[in-house]
Length: 467
Image (cartoon, rainbow, N blue to C red):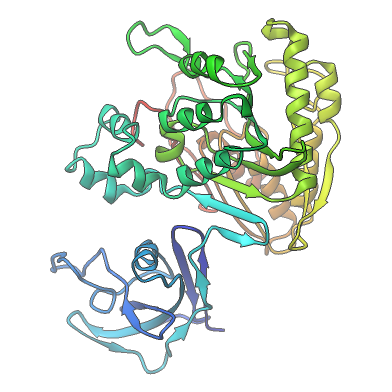
């Protein structure tokens, strides 16, 4: 069965294709972008045959793709220039010799579905993704082939630098637009983990008394003294003078207040929309790490997040400035129950908050009972019929990587793909799938990480070393 499928988000389009048979004699595939007027243009190519040199303007019609998927990061540029945001893709298998390639006759060309470069994913739901450091060619050009952590941090922290605008994509605009909802009426309730991006701090300051915020601490090393400091302190001091109520949620060591959400409440006090996602409010989070921001216009879900915000504020108040008194019984009990919602488009979702265990985890504890929200995740993994797809930042052990391996062992035809930022988790998938216990490693011992290609580890930028 031959087929071509295109997928789009706010920034890039990915195309994948299959012919259902071995393409003997195929030298690769030319891929053409088709716009709303039916105009076709071959996608750029970034590789050449042996003996050839890369040249400006080369396309996949000259140097075809020797794989079955590709990304089109240029579609967004075309959309911004022409106003057309809808595209299809034609895949043409080529045969012959380099410089004399022609379409194959026994394998016809195939055309994908039409997709749109857009942040809209349905009525009342908007999702944006940043470009982050995976845009390696763009980053390399910006630093003339010699990027360093210090120079990168300087550029992405400069509000006027083109690299910041490029890597952050639509992220900053979406965050600022959400804050602007309360510019003249209503309020924004925020709960944040990291906050040191100048542009976003300015956006929060502009709200004045229309902002109420629960701000945690982000521990980091001081660049000069190397001592541990709160990376949010400068923002904390500024918002103390400007905002309405501000709750300083200073977590004890080895704990983080990992919230990253905003709730817009109208002038009557009714929650209208919620902004959530993985994005920390730092130059790193906006530009250098893989993140998403989601805005959902749903009064019931927004009210649920506002309730959670109030629980965080109450828990902070009860702790009376004692870090170890945070995450008390009342908060954990409230977090222990989920709520389900049906959005405007008919999509169902279940909302959980953490911490929802009876008490904090003990270091090195064995045979722990799974938290309620993770139990719900496992049940959904076990019910998978076709595919399990995931991205995870430091998922711990055991994690969704292990649980996906267990599901795959029972259902061999499941399509499983995952990426984690810690290779111990991807290694966990490898050994779990084989049904064996990972070998113990001696302290300081360095051995190649065992990975299955279906679940891989990818390093995250920590502000020190560019992966």
